[in-house]
Length: 411
Image (tube, rainbow, N blue to C red; front, side, top):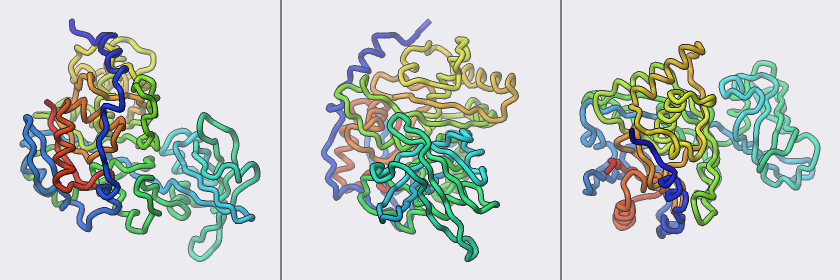
């Protein structure tokens, strides 16, 4: 019976992040999206061969019966900019809810909600309550922020507002800004409200977009549907940690951020019953699908914490179970607990040496040097990642969140 071994885990943890770098000039970073989502360039890598298309030609590259899996998370306007009476600017970046801790309940909360936040210019906010006026139908209301506790690298902040009918998500729409990536080196613009969301976004909770999905349009979906390509959705709320650089020399010393997953029983069974290959749209979908597999394995091996996958557990757990066995274990768990939604959290790190259990391919953008996302790409395509990225650099592809796209098949 084949299982993962401690040796594999050790070799992976000893990877030097300096080996996963390349020269990315600032001029190659896309600072703004193209006018039309689906006219971006598309690099296709399959069977060791690279070719170039336009994104609206993606359906030509996807076989009938393929299951494509999308992350339907929605980016929240998580940046709140307050000004003290002294004129000092304090920026609060909402990371995840604390009370209520459930994302849906937190966004529906009225009057008060407490969040884990990063605070910019914290030294200017040693005490007191920050206030921000906002207007609804010409009437002025006030959003207040109060520091409650210091958390590990963050702050616990209680928000309160005096509009009796507005829930927190509506308050954020009135007062917040879309948190575009820091490497764009510009302020949020009005166009980002639309373009830094996928056309299929549904469930609020992300502070960064699942950017591979930004290229899809209803026209591309119609072409995929007409070809017999099946689609499924799940939710992983993307945290600010997605931009966290790897500062340690070895990846074994890098602490992965935690991200939150939500998936229905119907979606799990849809993936189990896939007729063909499974292609994830975005690295967040990859992380979700692969994490769910290992969570099912934890249930099959009688784990007491099936809904939390720690950073290195995927390299330690038995790997001989099928997707069907794993996902059906989660469904049985949901039935037993009478759950309509499986809520989970993952810290998985996918790096060279990882054994993919669910996906055969990935639609994704081009990622930063020395990032965990680049490690994931290397785990999927091996050392050919260098050839792929060199081709993109030499052929005027645009990089990072608003950049061009790729279809990478495992092998």
